[in-house]
Length: 264
Image (cartoon, rainbow, N blue to C red; front, side, top):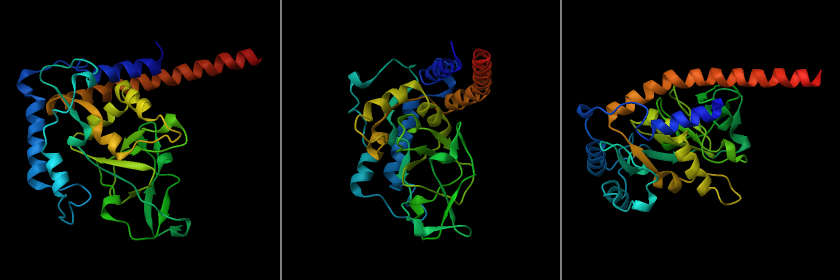
């Protein structure tokens, strides 16, 4: 098994409840989801308007508190542990698309940095080749430390869905990007990198445009573990995935060596 296949298999186990053992004392994801619903229903605030205190519309608030019983048995791809639950991604996140700007808004210095697709490399945010703009940026287009940045639209289908956690405040993000704000972002990032989500992505990218719409994102089914187990899954992956990445580099090095000998 190559490094790519091994990484996919590990991530699939992670979102299937097979990577770490279940611990009864950690509670039930259904209770966690119910708590989230109640908070959304009572506060009616989304991340774009949290600072201003602007409330969601009555329709949005109603949806936030709704029971996701519209999830059909046919939609569920596999069984998960009893203390997990399936939910729509939109129930546990707030999300928004990024900033639209024109070439005349771009400045060399003194503006607001805008993160784009090329600023996500190997699951990390890189800060070279940043674009700076001089314009008023809406609060909903300002990223915060801990937000999850996703490439939502790209000419290359393979690049759609690549993502990374933002580790600094004070930056915006481009119109072809989407931002997720959730207390579960570390787990969600690994879910987005998993074969489960990639299969979903292939299913929605059936037109000539390779993109993840806001509706696509919110309607996605995600297997949700209890919070404590999410943290254990993330810690396990943080230990395993760098080793697999080193394995990948060795594979690539070996392939180059074999190719060079063939050329000689």
